[in-house]
Length: 276
Image (cartoon, rainbow, N blue to C red; front, side, top):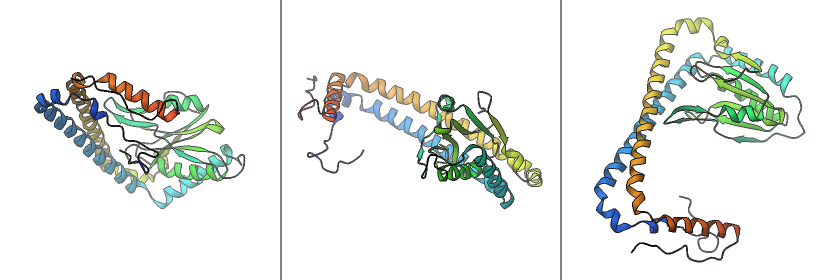
C-alpha cells in the first residue's frame, strides 16, 4: 500500500474491506485460515527455489567470467555498435526498464511477440551459462551514448542482470535465448556466447557446469510446481470469499474512484453496503 502524502486534501483512503460480509466470514474463519496458510507456504517454497536457482546461475557466470572473456565481449559489442548504432538523433538516449519474461505457474514465459511487433532485426544471443549480461551491458551503454532510447529488460531471476535489449527507433533487438527458450522466428543474426568462453576452462569445468544446470532446472521445475499449487489454493480462497463480498459496492467504489481521478464526480461517499 502507498501511504498518501496529503490525505484528505489530495489523496483519500479507499477501504474495500467495508465490502465484506464480516458476520458471514466469521463463520468460515477456520477454512479461511487453512487456505491462507497453504498458498502462502507454496509461494515461500517457490521463492526459495528461485533464489537457489539464481545463485547457481551466478556461480556459473563467476566460473567462466575471465578478463579474456570480458575483453572478447567488449570487442564484439564495439563491432555491433559500429554497424547498428551509429550516431543517433542527438543527445543521450533514455533507458526504461521493462520485464519481458517471467516465471509463472505455467512455466517461464517470454513475450517474444512484443519484440516482433517493434523490431525487424533481432540478434539472438544463444546463451547456455548466463553470459549474456556481459555483452548486453556494453551494448546498452554504447547505444545510449550514441543517442538511442533503449528498453532494458532485466532477468526476473536476477533483476540486476540484463536479459534483453530493445531499440524501437532502430527496429533492433538483442534477445538472450537458452535451452528450452529458443527464439521462435529466424533471427537477423545469431551469436553463440558459449563459444566465446575459454575452451580449456569449459573442458575442465564440464562436470560442474552440467551438474549445476541440472540442479537449476530441477529447482525451476519445483518453483513452477509450487506456483501452480499456490494459484490453485488462491483460487480456492477466492471461492470462499466471493459469496461474502458485496460486488455491487466494489463496482460503485471503482466508478467513484475513476470519476474522482478524472474530475467527473464530486468528492463524497463511495456507496452503501447491501449487507443487512
